[in-house]
Image 1 (cartoon, rainbow, N blue to C red):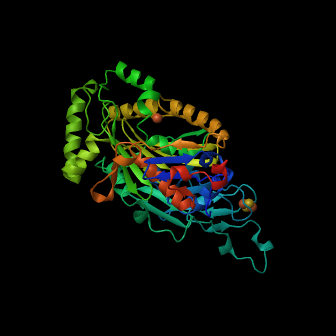
Image 2: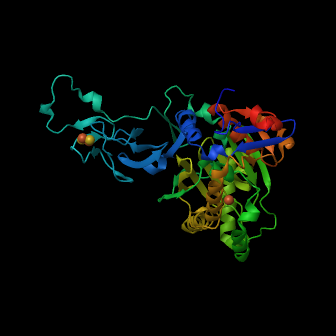
Length: 443
Ligand code: FES
Ligand code: FE
């Protein structure tokens, strides 16, 4: 066998179309070797969300973030251009910018006091006369991330200089970013403030979870009880359909009975809000046409952009980046996205929903993290209990127009893992009874 297997010698995936069985080996969540391969095979080549242009709207605005284990400065230069620099002094490596955000024309390194322009050039070298011979200033400009492109103001970076362009990479997922970007007539903005939290669990558990309908009702009972207490009609549940969008991207669509800040009114919001939402809907329809307007206004959805971006477009709009730190540790950064110029009352209802449902102290996230961390502890026993199952609806997938594949069950998760396996060079067994290596199976 060639390719990456579990330490036990078993394949990492079972994808048996005949039997309708799809399983992921739990070593995929626990093995150091798998984690290291993910960094090289996925995170060195995929486009990764770094931020949103609204976060750095003025020249000199910057944010510092860690993406794919690299410290990054996202910055709008004095020339108006958006750039991403490695946040490390080219002199000897000190962390150049130690704040999380701000506005600066010049970055000053605390170690030996060199300075750099926000467009990347080295500005001053202290006691420069001491350097002779081969010292060239241009060798010490800030190091830019090889690729940076924006789509509808979402700023992505890529560490592979030869990667396909962002729009090609996004494929069908681009339309789903349009559904977000078109919600505001005057554009969208990240609401000030970032939620940053960690879980002692593998990053893929969070990716699976965001496109998993199966757990919502059984796990998040306290949230549903809370919603009932506010007068929301939740009798329709949260069932829907999943879509494999290609390239590992996916989405789940549903109509949850808890209102939607984009034009789906709830009686408890009052008559004035009803009229405002009707006008908003008319505006969206005029801009994007009735078909897209229906998608934007009437449907809730969660989106997964491979490998580590999710957007919950529900009671609030939650943009979430999942950063793998170690096999059993992830960091999550999330922001609330909202239409520019939204009235104060609607904005405060949106932020309330953002915090109460998907915030780290909300109703849903702690439930999910409790499960992730418990699962991760159990994955220490991956040699004894090897397989997690994603077989629901294997034979129920049907092709739709626009190259999407619809599934009422877990096809979207299988799509994620098929892309993962292909990029990782992971061993996939296409027969469930062939999943054990010959010697082990014979025992
Ligand atoms: Fe920054 Fe020396 S490490 S000036
Ligand atoms: Fe959940």
